[in-house]
Image (cartoon, rainbow, N blue to C red; front, side, top):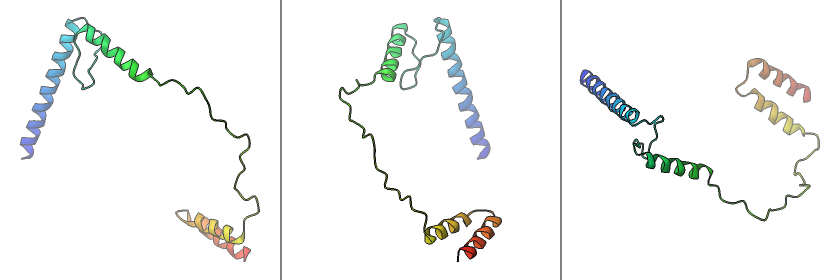
Length: 119
């Protein structure tokens, strides 16, 4: 079974490369310097279609909608809802315990010693 799978994959690989080589040779024979593909991935051989495809690509890439004529004003000063008071003992304890999670043992020991000092 494994051998059959290997042979099948090898055959598919060789078929793909031979198709790729024939497409490349055909493009080179037509004097195409770059390989250009359709949106579905197939090669484009016609020079006119190649130009149209470039136009489609650039329109899609650079075709931005126009900017709005009116802008919303941004307030100059937005009040923060952050307390500037010193942290409470409960907040300190919570943060020190959070430091101990997934950290080196030295930090856990330091945290425990600090908690004892605070008490």
